[in-house]
Amino acid sequence: MAFLAPLWLSLAALAAVPVLLHLLRRNIGARVEFPAVRYLQSAERDASKDVRAKNLLLLLLRILIVVLLALAAAKPIWTRGEGTPRELAIVLDNSLSSTAIVDGAPVLDRLTAAARELRKASGAAERLWLITADGTVYTGADAIDAALSRVIAVPGAGQLDAAVRTAISLTQGAGNEGGAIAILTDGQRTAWPNELPASTSRIRVFVPTLAAPPNGAILSAVAVPQWWTPRGTIELTIQAVRDSTAYRIAIGDNTLTRGVIVRNAGDSLATARIPIVGAGKGWQPLDVTIEPSGVGGDDHAIIPIVIGGAPAVREAAGEFTAAAVSALRESGRVRASGDVTVSLASAAQVSALPALILPPADAGGVVAANAALSKLGIPWRFGAEQRGAQVVRSMLGDLRGDTAIRVTQWFPLIAQPNAIGDTIAQVGTAVWMVRGPRWIVLGSRLDPASTTLPVRATFVPWLADAISNLASGTTAATIAAPGAMINAPGGTTELRSADGKIRRAVNSATLVGPTIPGLYFWMNGSDVIGAVGVQLGRDEPQLGRAAPAELVQRFGGADRAILNSDVPAFLGSVRQSGASQPMAVPLLVLALIAVLAEAWLSGRYRTRGAGVADSLARAA
Image (tube, rainbow, N blue to C red; front, side):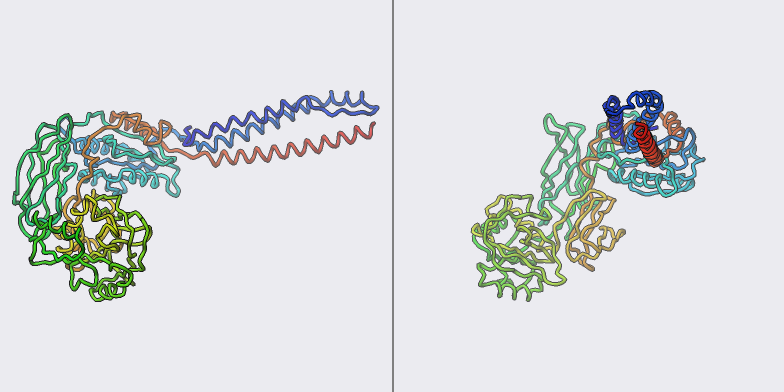
């Protein structure tokens, strides 16, 4: 028998309470003053044996009640015996880390081979499932055999916690007594960050004893800026296994540059800023590749960029904005004239989009500003002027991570019916900055008297990104891990891969992102309004095996999980797991029976004792 909540066994200590009360009351007797004392003493001696027996029985019943309740609270499970469990769920860890080459073969090959042997040895199971790291469930021997013959690693860590929860749900479903779960994993620490929920299923784990090999991987690849003219920069961070690592940056088959990145002194990381001249026009998938080592699939990354001429800017937003635009013009990010002109001005001064739109100088200009927004087709309006020091809260990370921006004067932005737009920042609960197709509306003027934004170090980079996004008619490109939750820009109708092979309708503001690395576009009809570059996260490429004791703890402790590194021992452990039966309900039923017996015996004893006392009183 095992316990899912063994701490509740400490309640059994309360069984000492009935014993203590019994001992305290054993010498308590009533002092009776009447002539027949000798007769009473004789009657007491005759009945003492019967009284002691009844008291002892009541004491034992009360102790039994406390012990049964403590056992039930500890959620015991009873093992039916040896033999293949009736319900068996096999969880196969085919995450990216399982592709690591150890002793000349991928770890995934060892895990898959063990899973095949387990499937063959489990033919007597009434229900059999296979759940892979991406959450796919295969039911029945034939489907499992077919899946194991073609299994490949998923691009990333997968959702192993969710896979095990699915296994628990299947083995504890309606009509199941609580089956067994067999987990085959490489023991990657980052793949098992959380402890599993309590269950009646018995867990058997196979982890081959294999040292994690050195692994070179791209940890971060970011394009700066997003809009290239056509020059830009790649900020690259890799996990290096050598002092120097070769890289290649290309768009399709067109190699833009090659080079070597040198590892930082005394560190396993290597970082570099790589200037590049892009090729083509519009959205492009920039492919960054390093020489492979260790795990496959983490040696390349896709970065979305936009290539085009530098946009022109018409600025009428104050001296700080003018100085920032001048700096951008000197760096080639903007120019005096071009195919696209972005306006930076108050609403009443903007006659066409794209534009960064500012509020009026005071409350007297709100009516004219809102009329201008209506004329431009922007479904947002300026509210009543507000004053007082407040902190700006970034909602989508589009303020370059700056958390110290403050406002002293602002006009809350109010959405109109059926308004589209992404809220970039808020002041309290009020919208302060909102972005839509080819427009951004700001609730404060770009002046230190209204907000600290124009005097922050992040102002010029933020303004450059905003101008680039407005010129391209898109939102900022984002980077996401495979299968991560992503936010769709306002007005999105579809998420489409760059090659057009994957197309998903978008019906909500938040959705699960693609699981396959690559470039994906946010679409509004036939127009591209944003992009997502799906890359591996930083954790999965950093190989690190969890210690056996750590894994056992993750899987619920030694009472629930048994870990093996040898295939025959693992198969034997699964075969012997049998099925398990929760015992809490039977124990509660026994406790109820004991309570009823105690109540009946106590009542009978009190009634009989009262009758004896009456007889003695009459005799007196």
